Image 1 (cartoon, rainbow, N blue to C red):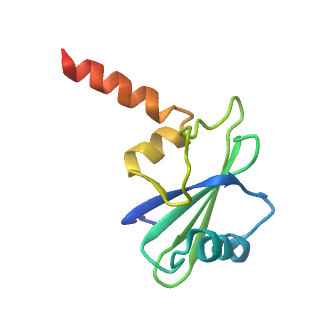
Image 2: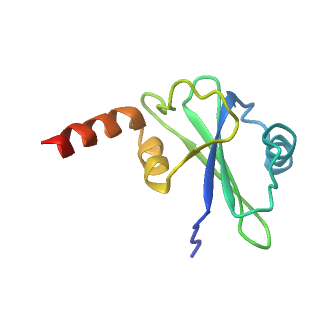
Length: 115
């Protein structure tokens, strides 16, 4: 069983060609993010329509490439990402991969906790 516990999860601010595989995505991590693709981090990439996501992760002895295509709607990436080093928590990534909007959940939680 594959267990993934990255220290950081980075989301790309740019659209990525979903034909890219491990080598192409790891080159983006190194050249654009200026990060070590062999570190304990996960890198999330999306296409122009935000209906496909690829996640690159080094598990210690090889790369894992996860791919998800949402059938209805699109992934709701945070607005205003201005850096290629935008990070999210594992919980926020889970929300994102289920088509939820991170900002709306945070707003709801803050309203709920204010009561």
